[in-house]
Length: 386
Image (tube, rainbow, N blue to C red):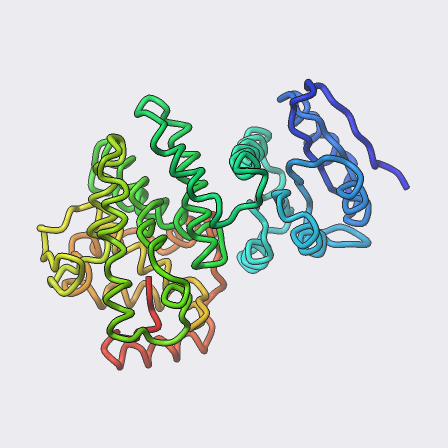
């Protein structure tokens, strides 16, 4: 065996980064970049060596190539996620495709970068994963889970407006914990937050307003902490009583956030993100421009993401079908002006953004058939819950 090595230029507190690639020059380039930033590094030339090292050495983040001999990066990802769920995995590939990215993220990859990735991009991804991992470990040493909510709520209340970077890190960590309960994923809220900010930029809003929209997106479903599992995780249609309980979550979320000074505007988005342009939404039944702009923007991208995602009660729809459904609901569920901006964005731009945050496979025939049936029923399929 060779290239199972450890070097360091950082102190005892530096993060431990495992670099796995069968190409020696790639390993060395990444190792040099990572060590120059002060981290300790281990290197392995294949997945078998990497797993052995994970069993014997402290590793905080793993950066791995996908195409390798003996054990592919995807097989390594699957095994590492199963055996070491608290070690984030960043995947690299020289042959990028939407299909590969979809598969990798669904197997548990935290990020997906295309080779040759710039050094600053690799470091930015590592830094992000290390920050999130520190938050997980600080919550009584537990892995991300529902028992950490009090920990993150405490951080949210303690931070002030000047702690901008810390605020966003804590909010993302809190959103990840909330998502893990309902969606079995740690990215739904971050995706829709990104989409909402991206779409809102077409309205020439201030950076502060865009920040409020981003934070409102991250925390839009925070009120669901008050819902029991038998409602939140139910796979079939909700009963009338269950739906009434479900429809209280925007109010609950608003009450949680309203007294936190730097989240007051975000709280308005949380309160109104299920309002409909035609006045048939909840909790207040607001109509048209009575609904805050941030909430009108968010409503579009939240539904868009829901349609693009697999759920226990239905399969993901294709991008084209999801886009068509947004246009079909203009003037009823969605603000026509927001839909106009949404539709004006080239499809490839949306596809690129989606591929970055949560890649979606090209349209499947069954998705198209499902969507046509859904549209024929008037778009009221209770399986589309967001």
